[in-house]
Image (cartoon, rainbow, N blue to C red):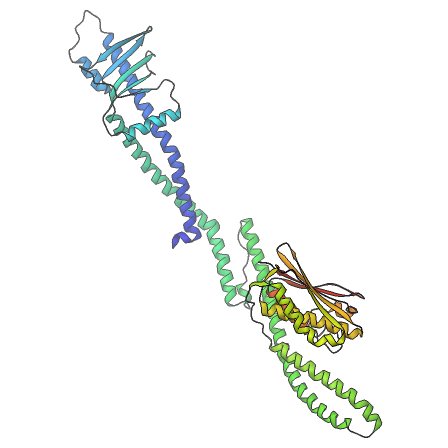
Length: 461
């Protein structure tokens, strides 16, 4: 629908505001017109009465003169205030009963508007009395009576003229504002939107990067920011394509290298059975080195093929999930003197994918257990959690020897951040990616001779 577009909504708002403004003008204007109409009748009534009273007593007055003067002024009676004396100067025969009275002497705008509303709301041809001061000739107080129907007709005619003028004015102003907004705002915004759509379809095409042209400061800032974003994204996509090609090559090399190493491992197994003492001492080291190399190739292939699905977020009670992780990982380390403990409030909940969070915590707990195992001493791994505003902080702490400096420098980098000898560091990389997909973060909180603490920050529901 047109009203769902920016142009349509702006046009609708412009028309609405113009109509409101015209209404605010229309009501006082009609009230003032009524006041002018009644004031004119007061002036005509005074002039007619003075003309009739000014006729010398010795001169004959036409018998129909008074009726003609009253008909010309559209009045029934005229009363003058002269020297503190009220005098009925002119009157029709058998004047009708007055049904409503209005006083214009000290009438304010609100009273005038209220009186105009009464005229519109009344459908009868009432007889009204109007009192006020005359503005022409001999100024004084005058009171006249008249029928209300002619006043209503004149007010309706005047109101229609104002209405037609308002409609024309509203249409003109709305059209001008519409085209002005189209030219100054909608067209530049549409240009930005079209550029984004074109860039989405072919982000590698440099000709589709927007060139800032708007002279409006805010729109130019938006265009400049979009251009910078498109340039940076195009560079990142090119880098990603190069890395993907390199990753494909590494995967192929790893596959072929794994096959070669497997063959070499079979040959090394035969060498290990040699009776030569020197060969017997060297063969186990060779077999171990080949096994590590094969394992590295297999992890590289697995990491290259891994494509994690987006998390299915839900409200997950944290305590049961942590207990499940503790039970799962305790089975393999209990006999090594390593205890895994949980300290999680029962009411704590997070917004996460339960399966992916289980993998993250399992990886961290397993790494912590392996760190303690390398120290050759018993130790403890503790999984704790606490609420921190809108976030939940889950900490995995161990009493191991801490991370070496090289591991800290390359943490969360594949094939470089492994702290354990023979490790590739892929577990932490995958865990960090999973947590990032939840909108959280995996960080190294602290490490040292007393142990290491990793912290997972997740949103709470």
